[in-house]
Image 1 (cartoon, one colour):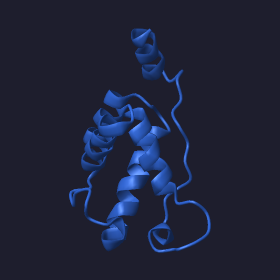
Image 2 (cartoon, helix red, strand yellow; image 1 turned 90 degrees about the vertical axis):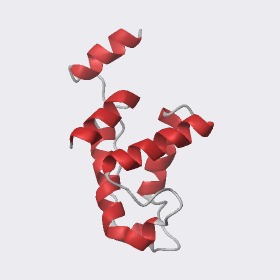
Image 3 (tube, rainbow, N blue to C red; image 1 turned 60 degrees about the horizontal axis):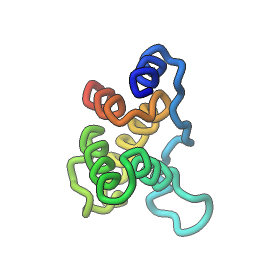
Image 4 (cartoon, rainbow, N blue to C red; image 1 turned 30 degrees about the horizontal axis):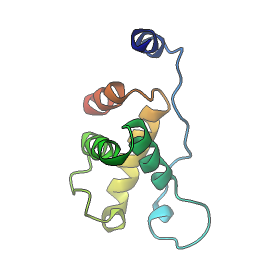
Length: 109
């Protein structure tokens, strides 16, 4: 089954998840629409298997996408970089939801 999913993903038969574009105001607003970057973080944790494994996967993805500040550094302190990182992840998630492919695509970009 895993082999079939990989083949489908390689040939574009399997689609990822589409999110709205992440914008600067998401890191500073207090009310309104639920921030896309939080939806992306939650999806990464889910793709990673939930719990500690999911959180670890999210951390690896953020690092592969260029977030070098670490998980304890608030995104709003470097919001321009955070927007860039999350939009990179967003673009990859639109293509695949496979853990290895996500990391590979981000490391190649």
